[in-house]
Image (tube, rainbow, N blue to C red; front, side, top):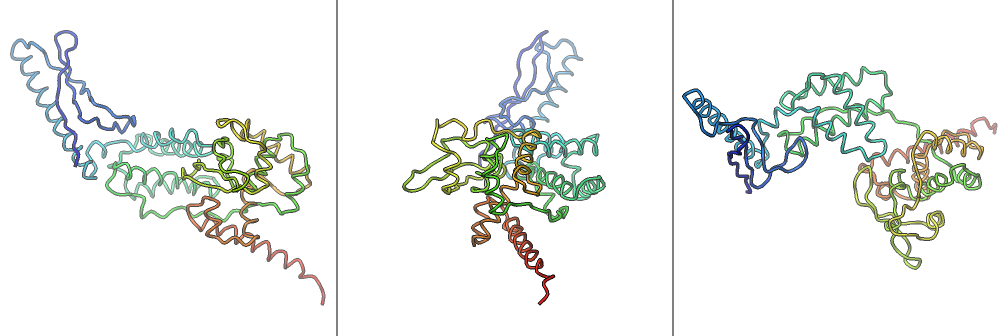
Length: 369
């Protein structure tokens, strides 16, 4: 097993002093910055030429303390090498760790805002901080009750608590804790939401109706025939489009939400929407943005097509799923097409379509025979 050598060293500084630091070989990961480092300055110094018993005693005590710190680092690194939690990790503040995870989500549309909200809730709830050593099931349940007490929609509460548990799980993966403290914690149950989708004749209405933001119209229709999320369509570049006319075209890309590498075959309507291929690093949907103003343009477009439904960009993805089920695609295949981690998520669309069929049948209840 590879182990890190820790050596106590001295560096000359001003006024005849020598600063004490630890030298790591090979470099170790600084858990606060996420970067590797070779040095750790202790903020302690000894005198190069001590004069008299007081200065000599200062050097003796300082060196003894520095050696003790060095020995503790050796012990902590050995623990980490064996997958055990070190004292330094136990004393680490969980909220500071959560903040680093929040920063890592900055480029992900929609995700960052949710993580930042949970970060603010944590800071408000534990305003003096909470270390990993203090974090246990009881405290996790305390924060769960705090979220449940908020005047929020049930699924928003579930989403916030899910992010909190995800951070705890990640801490275990990062060897900060010996076990996943969230493993046996019951999640906040989500309510089944109404997932609006479009019928084939409604799609045709949208195709024929002008939209004040043509790029959003194209992207929306592209989502209907591919099932791709807004974030993945927005990030799509021409070098992601593979294949040829003879064998067919497909997309090879990494999903923004799940970070999974995916391949999506393109149906003929998708090829028609994107048009002729351009430069490799150009965006396929150049200028595609997400904002309240753009959402209004989609809403206006739907109304202009005389469709009486509350349609958002994500409704295109719902439409893709229901069209696939309607065409006979099995749940397992659809789950792969949608990039779902759990098949339970995909099953919602089958229930949705069955519900619509039941509603359609009951429209005949008033017929007298």
